[in-house]
Length: 203
Ligand code: BEZ
Figure 1 (spheres, protein in one colour):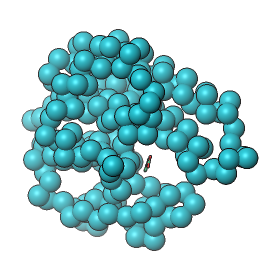
Figure 2: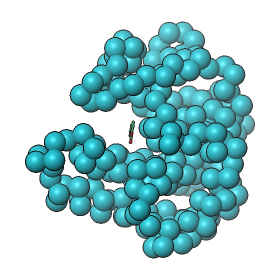
Figure 3: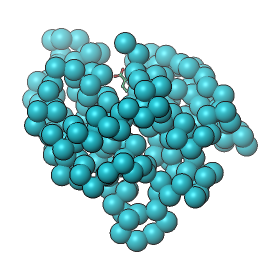
């Protein structure tokens, strides 16, 4: 299979961490692209009608996207990992956690695009504030759950870690650890994992 990716993306990081944790890295050809909404990669557009990273092209030539679909596919290759529990409350807990973390990424990335890509005179402060309010909502929810993560790992926990990592990458002066100490304590431990260390976003 082939992964079309860009290393700054937290969605890509989710997939990379999952690949490493599941020992699937050797089965993947990595194709790095540079892409943005206003300058879209032709390689990516040829594989994915939405021109979004990450895109995983399976060995049968068919693409998978978005990151949640890709991680479900990877987990299906190693069903014993239990990263997505098959049924019951445990399944919905993991799916909700993953959705919370991805929603946090969405809002943080949206605000980053507004500030980083949009001309200064067109930026909308209230919209950015609203996105960051959603980030704090997600942080509060993750902080409330963090004590239950222990030293475990599943698809939701990986997503939560990559969402926190994105805040450190793009919002380094935000100081989220001061307000969300349980999440900070868990993240300090989880981020030491080899898979997290090896997928740090570019400096
Ligand atoms: C970023 O550079 O912040 C970024 C890159 C790709 C996807 C999302 C965010």
